[in-house]
Image 1: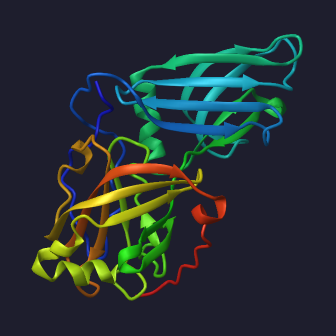
Image 2: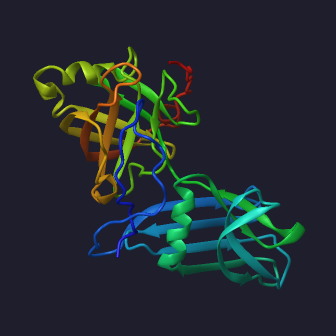
Length: 298
């Protein structure tokens, strides 16, 4: 079975689609499991090895540990957690790993669907990390994954850094990705939103008002990610006056949704532009990491 994706009805609030989608997912069965998300962590700032956690589309996962510099011939607890390394709140606990005489160890092991479901439930709403060992000998690292960092529709003059929204009201001069959904390399919807203002997503709104946005169809969108890749999409659909995102978690194909408001603050209806992936290429670090300069506006 694919990971469970939440079916709850989602409504578009007064500003942008709420980032209040709770963890847990639901989707129809997949014929084969492929990698959906890969988290990576450096333990002890990299001096004590690495951890990699893969999530597959059938709901299972795989945890790979490649350790060095631990106490020799030791049995080390392994947990995924939230909170701080010194006072972690355990999310999932794994079989301890045993180091050799040099303090090194390697293991790649399967992660069951129940454990992966719990991990996803926390990852959708906040940061997670991994700890190997206990007490003063424990080594920790944040579990991170590539995220959208820039969105551009060059034919419309749109080019914005993309950030994770951390305030109650979306800032200006940037676009934002929805953490509760997916990133460009992952199966599902990548959701990027910004205000309909000059220098932001206003060209999308203006174009949507003419012949229901016919001129947008076929335009290319580029989304850059933190691992220095650029994904190219082609706009296939323009949805006007949207008030609900029902079914967004049931979508298992890779898609990009760009959202913006259709009126001033308080307007419920939103514009959503849907695009399909057509290519991916490497890019420079500088191109994929524009300096965001959010302005907190109303």
